[in-house]
Structure formats: structure tokens, C-alpha cells
View 1 (cartoon, rainbow, N blue to C red):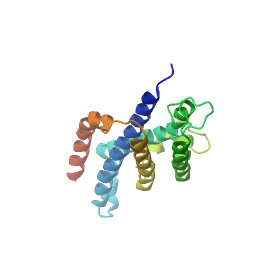
View 2: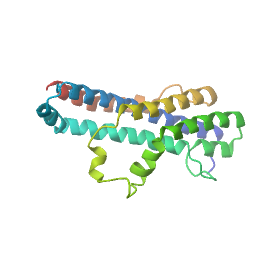
View 3: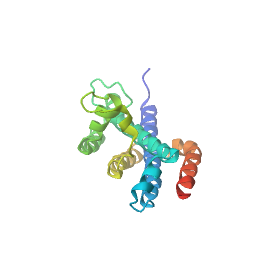
View 4: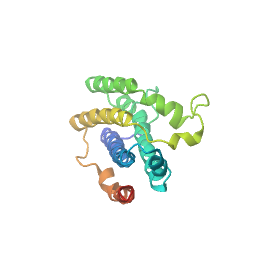
Length: 197
């Protein structure tokens, strides 16, 4: 079934909003983790206790998973297969010729490749390559560093501006609006438990 131009635009916008929401949540969980770690005052004993609580494990697990979801979405949006098979900008341009807009997307795609988030996705998240994945348990031992979240946020921010200016996108992030209350439950539990230390 071939989608209309408006349908493709709407679905691409939804993916961008979804990635934006997961990145925001990943960043908020990292804030809780870093505050808890800083409260340990460089005491090895306190760091050990903090790191090994169920609350900290929950924070790390969700923080990593949320970043992974955002990276998977970015990789989908920047698909380069010909013919395209995913809901991507390539799919959009295969069905709608807009060379000026395609040039802008290619510029953002190039910036995405420079972040090396695609390597993170290809070798660790999606394919679990034998020579680089290591022990599968280790993927969730530590939170993802803020610099990688910021890189992904930068790409998503550029995409948001691009689609808001050029697509018929909803003004609201309905994904975030719908699921924020669910995330708030997790956030409040994690934050309040971290503050009790």
C-alpha cells in the first residue's frame, strides 16, 4: 500500500517526536544517576552501595534502553537502501521529489554519521557483532554518557526544525503527551529513592 505524501510526512514526524521524547527521558534518568553518584562523596563504600541498589539498576536499564530506541529511530530515518524499505527520508524522497529539502536532509544525515551513533547501533544494539559486543550483561552495567545523548539530541533537534518548517506536522508531540504520565511514575520512584540515601 502506497502512503500519501501527507501520511509519510506525519509518520516521519511521529518518529522524530518519539526519538525526542526518549532522549529527554534518558537525560532525566542520567541526571538522577549522576546526582546519586555525586552524593557518594567519592567514598568507595557508598559508591558500591549506590551502584548495587535495585533503584540504580532500574535507572541504568531504562536510561540505556531509551537512548537505544532513539538511535534505532535515527538509523531508520536515515536509511540509505535503494529502494528504501523503511519509513525514512529516503522512502519519502523516492515517492516525492523535493531536491532542495533532500539536500538539507543529506546534510543532517552527514552530521549523524559524524556522531558515530550509527556504529553504536550497528555493532552493539541491532547486530551484536561478535568481535565488539563483549559480554551481553555489560551493555547495561553503566549509563550511556551524556555526550552521546547530546549528540543524538542535536540531530533530533535539527530534524524537528526541518520537518516543522517543511512538513505538515502536528504541532504537539502526541507520543510524549500520551506517555509522559507513565514515565513520571518511574521518574518519581527513582528520584525519591535516590534522595533517601
